[in-house]
Image (cartoon, rainbow, N blue to C red):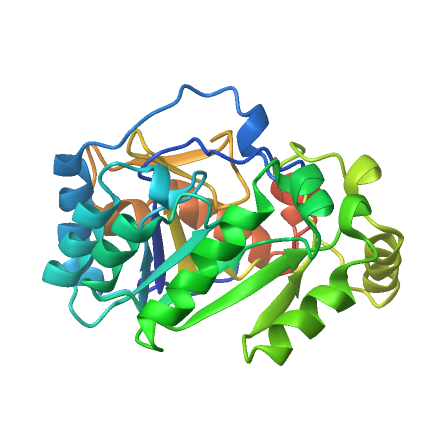
Length: 293
């Protein structure tokens, strides 16, 4: 028998509006995804958020594998969350290249609890190599956000260390910290095998992984995401987690089920029980996952 553990509700619900992006990041699975490009219809999105009224999640993120400001319905989606879940924090992660003044004004008219800017470079050269974006445009858009938001929306910038930006992490942190901006370094992940860590990871990243393994932080422990985080793809299917970018493990379909039916369904429950029993290595994706949650 597997040990029992009650699961009440997800604290974070992530709903994918689109599954494509303007950036070409080598550390991200989106450029190599094989599943069809999709735009979630607003009727389905509203149905999912309506389901969440019962759940009362702490956070809703209206994106998953895609750039939120490329989604033509992003502001309508945020307004829907504000209307139906007024006490829920809305979080966005963006590369900032498409956040022009018109979109910024629309964003500032809504209730958003956090914007995380994925920058990943200090120099224009590294920015182009890592993300394929216009460094000057990105920086100008972030500067405008800081100036016009006047602290109304909390924000931070992030940096995923890899070979192309290896020697810029400290300069990146120093620059933003001098401006009073929170700057966070993140670990490179393999996203279900879609990112080749052997090619992308920095020496420091490989050393960190080695020490984690030596300290016993193996993938035999139960992953916290299974007990807190629900992810929905643009076609309405619920995938295993945010690292299952291709939707290789489908645990439900919100076109036909409610959020709570999927969350407490047999598929997710079975996976959780396998994790709790120390059998995570036997599961597809989970067994080789590089994330530690």
